[in-house]
Image 1: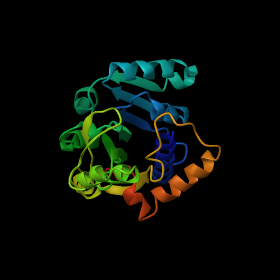
Image 2 (image 1 turned 180 degrees about the horizontal axis):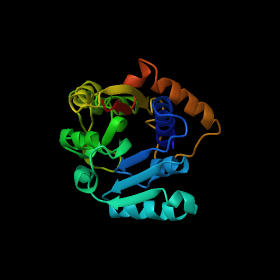
Image 3 (image 1 turned 120 degrees about the vertical axis):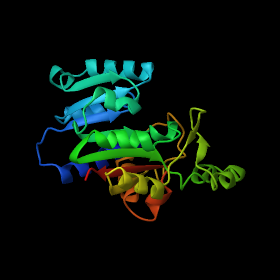
Image 4 (image 1 turned 180 degrees about the vertical axis):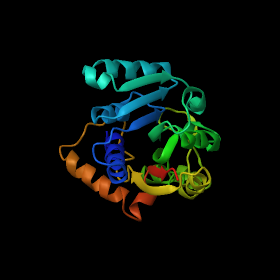
Length: 239
C-alpha cells in the first residue's frame, strides 16, 4: 500500500507539473501487474494501455478492469506480452507517459528495454521507473540484525527478493547516465519506503496511516533520507 500510494502521488505531481490541466494523456504501463497504477490513471481520465507477461497478473488485471464502470473500462486496453517487444505492438512516439515499475530487477541487461521505452514517448513525454535501490541493499538486513547479510550487500547489486527469486538492483548514478544516453534525461527522483521496508508482508495498516504516508513522502524527496530508500522512483523526460 505504501509503495503504490507514494508512487501515485509522486507521479501525479510530475504529470501536473508537466502537462496542461485537463489534458487526457496516452499512458503505457509496462509490467502493469494487477493494474493498480493503470486503473488509477484511467479513473483520472487518461487513456491507458497495460502490458503484462504473467498470465496470473493479467488475469487479475482483467478482473479489476471488468469491475470498473463502463467509462473507465473503455479507457483501458490490456496486452499480454513482453515489455521488450513494445516496438512490435506500438509506433514510436505513441505515448505521453510510460511507466515501468518493478520490472528492471528481473532484467539482466536493462539498457535495450529502456531504449525501447524511450522510443515510445512523444517529445516532452515522461518516463517513470521504479527500481530497487542498489546503493541501499545493506539497509534491510542491517535493520533486521543480519550483520553478515548487510556486509555482503555492500559489494553487489544482486539480492534475493521476498518471493525468493534472485534478482538485481539499480544504482542511481548508473540509471542517470542511461537515461541521458537514451534521450530521456533524469528530471526528478524520489525514494520510496524509507521507513517501512522492514514491515512484514500482509501487515495491517496502522491507525495513523496518513501520518505514516506523510513521513514517507517527505523523506522520499529529502536528502539524505531518500538515498537509503528501498526503492527509487526516477522520472525522465524525452528531449
